[in-house]
Amino acid sequence: MNLVLLSKEDITGSGKRAVIRGRRHKHILEVLKLSAGDGLSVGVIGGRIGTGRVLAIDDRSLEMEVSFTEDPPHLVPGTLILAMPRPIVFNRLLGHVTALGIKKIIIFHSNRVEKSYWKSPVLKEENIRSQLILGLEQAKDTVIPEVSFRMKFKPFAEDELPLIVKETSAFVAHPEGTQILPCGVKGAFTLVVGPEGGFLPGETEAFKRSGCRCVSLGERILRVETAVVAALSRLASF
Image (cartoon, rainbow, N blue to C red; front, top):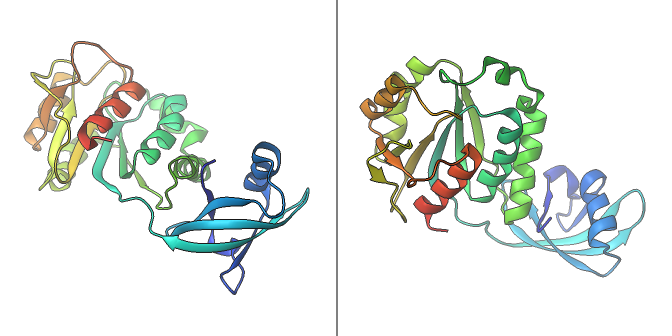
């Protein structure tokens, strides 16, 4: 935990003190091992970041003095469009993608996505939010990404996607792409990544018609979670 992320409910009416309990308190007490007088980095969900100083800590709660003086990191102007991966992979990717600064994530269904994936408990709102929070804490960010779902491929690819990719550099990652995904794209970008096993030819063509360029990451075939992080890193030049 590189940043203690606070909600407005954690902060007292004066705005200068905060009280936390639960997971964050336990981490500070047992892992960071902080005590009264120690400092730490803090931020407000959707707001600024700054510093905190522990005033009191016991087995039940932590009280700190807080000051918010800086804006969060600049967001990455990219949209990730991802075919629903295996639930365990989806869970991990939420935190990774959030830490990289992506603020818009669209998860969609394609032919090679198992329908059972959509019934997984990892898709519950509370789990998604908790994974996004972990990513923000890792990267010292405060702005929670927007995560949305599209269950029907054809209307999404044909009707909605052209509007999403408009005025962006748009790419669909595919091992048979004739171009290599570029590095350091200027301005907004859209990245489409398929499921394990890849897209069917008709799906790839639908993305091309919507304005996406078919690109690859080279000769190696990567797992979805590796491909997503590698591709986003290339596009944004972290």
